[in-house]
Image 1 (cartoon, one colour):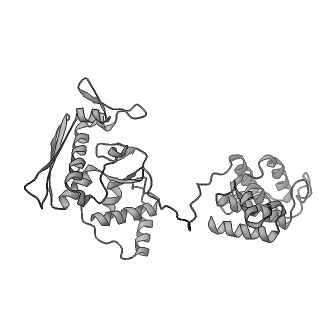
Image 2 (cartoon, helix red, strand yellow):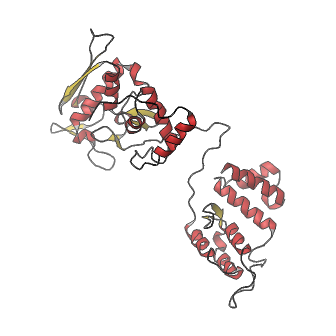
Image 3 (cartoon, helix red, strand yellow):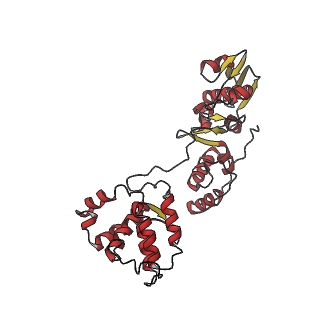
Length: 346
């Protein structure tokens, strides 16, 4: 693996330009999965790379976050050491490896670290069976310590001696992903690990993002059929079919937004003509099926907004705390106000 890196050149001069650059770069499907589709993560890595003096792409491919801690491959760590003008020498085989660093500002002293299979066994990284390393992942498959012991021993030696000799050039990149608990390949890149996406930690003034919405499978099927209905009578049939799941969440076929199934059926019914087919009931305006009035629509809209904002489970208590009355006793104006607030936070 090459240890050469290229010094970063500015790709943007201000934050808006950097954000746009990160948004475009995040669309590349060749990025590590922690960055693909995550422009905030890309922006963080770009800034980290600029601190280290490396290009954005070098940062995106060389920096990983394991359990909230930034890490780098031994190749990147070694490259940072050499970039700072220090000498790094590495030698080894499948049994042991040694790494030496001679600092440019202290050429009379040599820092050295050695790792062998016995030390790796003591650290719990592998077992020695018949004189060979044995290490399996949680699925029983051989890890890099079993397949590439020479590369793993060199990586351990490099990062340990770099921490001793060149703390000033690492800027927090003290460990490789493997040292933080990741399973890695021969080049030190995570292949199966608790790799966390870089994320912003919300403060008291920022609403945390809701979990990805998953529509109810049966309810979604009914909603999809409702979009092709020709009359209110047809919606009445679907409403009766959905009686047990009328409050589940679906993706409205027309808006592609989360919505309560009952709210969506009511909205579709209101857009259809009054007349119904001869073989079906004359109208959906039936007290036993749905109250086609402003209040029903307001309640359903509120529940849909709560679902989209990720607070459907607590909306009853939240509403009562905010307005002093339960949803069942609220005015249309109160329902509309809370709906507007939730849609703004979703």
